[in-house]
Amino acid sequence: MSKQKNPPKVNLKQIEKIIAEYQGRKWALIPLVQEVQEKVGYIPSESIPTIASALGLFPSQVQAVITFYEQLYTEPRGKNIIRVCRGTACHVRGGKTILKLVKQHLGIDEGETTEDMEYTLETVACIGVCALAPNIMVNKEAHGNMNPKKVARLFERSGKE
Ligand code: FES
Image (cartoon, protein in one colour):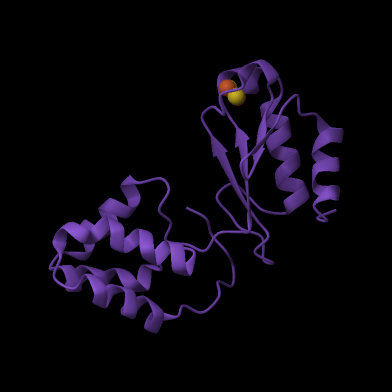
C-alpha cells in the first residue's frame, strides 16, 4: 500500500455515481472496485462503507477483497511505479544497495509516493530476469545490471535529480 503525505481530495460524488450502477449486485464487487480504481486512480478508504452498503456486504468483506488483490489500491499512486527486485539473485548482486539508492533519489521509503505524485516505490519478489540482476522495473520496462551510476542516470533522465 502506498502512502502520500498530503493526498488529493477524494471526489466521492464521482464514486457514488459508479456505485449506483452496481446497486444490490453482490457479485459485482470486483468489477465495481476495478471501475472505481480505473476512473479515480485508486479506491479511497472513505468509499468502502458506501460500496459495502450498496452491495449488501460488510465493509470488512470489501476491505478483505481489496487487500487480497495486489493490483487494487486504497491509496493514490504515482504516475510512475518503480519496483525494485528483492529476490535472491538480485539480493546477492547488490539489490539492497540499489534499493537504498533509489530511496535516496526519490526521498521516499518503500510503499510511499512522492509529494508531486510522480513516483511510487515498491519492491517485488522477482521480476523474472534474474540473469540480469540486480533489476529495477520502471512501469513496464525492466532495467537490468543496475549499479549506482545507472540508478542516478535513470532518475536524471526522468527529471528527478
Ligand atoms: S531475483 Fe531479481 S529478477 Fe529474479
